[in-house]
Image (cartoon, rainbow, N blue to C red; front, side, top):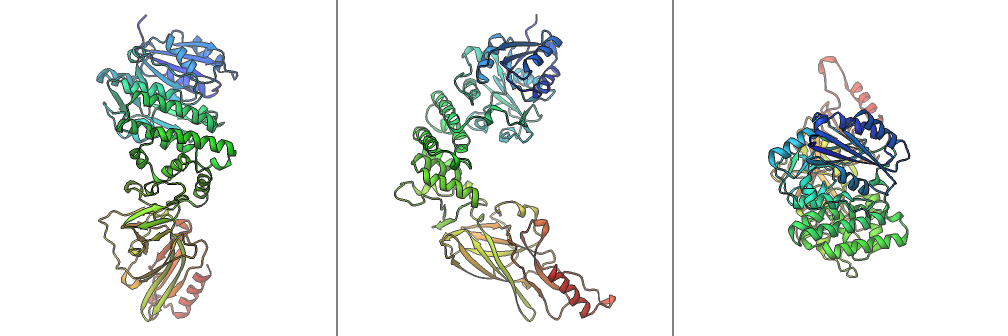
Length: 542
């Protein structure tokens, strides 16, 4: 019998009805039955998955092989069992609740043969709301680096591996890890591979989030995930010596696995579990969190990891709770730098350096302006001169001398309706000169009240004006929420064109300053002052 090109390993435990679609996607591969072997291991299923595997084995003899065994508690043992009987030149792993694109195996085997690749990664996409990191799949790359790409964020074993590589290094899955047992296998294969290739021009793998959230990744508790992450990080550290390459690999675990342990559900854990989680994170941070790796994390994750490392459990609970309820904290401006005022900022008892709280350049966009709130708006009019007076609460304190508000001519874009604020390029030219501004700290000391008096006649806009704020040398477009506060309506006297500030429904209640007319004057229609005032009253009461 001819040796198949690829053996597909399927570890199965209670995945009906998803298993049927998975198997159909395998036997329907364009590579053909003569080049394909499916090795499925039923790990003690109780939902009919075993019978479904037997049905496919009977229907596709010689292509689908089935092994039944008692439940082992995870996918590692059945995957290892399948590797013992697989015969293909390459081996590919697929989750039994996921499925493949029709050309997936043919394309990956062709790539491996053409480039001599030991590992080939086909683009994965999520279905039913399953999150799949996409940074790696921007373009095809026949020779990608584990340490200089987004590959550390894509460590599932759902890849094509050269069988000779697997057997030469005795690669197997650790059977004592209920979660993440595929990562040590994948990392070691990638470390030892002569070449790793990425294919991004086809949807190879469809990762399915089950309706019952039964995927094993979603079932493990905090302490199990912590224990597994510690074992995975140690394995990776044993393979890669300390330095930038190890930092690049372990950054994934601080950004993803460890950070997920201190998200919104952390305060609801028991006090003892919270302490154990922080102690476990602290041990890993002490061992692997170099200054460079710490500074590469965004400020939110960096603060949480460092508070856990310092044993500041109560402060960490407060950070998570505040983040859930209020979003970004206020920011302290000092000497051209911005610091997030999380609990622990300049707290000598904790002894964390300011660097922990500093917003690094790559983390700045949108964060400084995120706490900006609309307080009030009103018109000031003197003859034909019309000014808009805005009062804003800006979530920054400290060196606010350069804090200004601007208006820019043009309609409010859809991007302004997103959360936070959009940062403008440094070379963007603002179309309207500054008005007159003053700013004072708010009574709670956590923000700055900015009063901006801006001459609207200088705008001469027909499409409206947009609100911007300059903070710490960057200019942000602010999607201001009105919060149900009344907005002014003013008529420019001796003309038939009134102006208004409105809370436009299309921007979900955010402030849009409109200097365009409420209606166009039509002298030929004989509309007089009485009709104009009637329209004005209707607009005010709308």
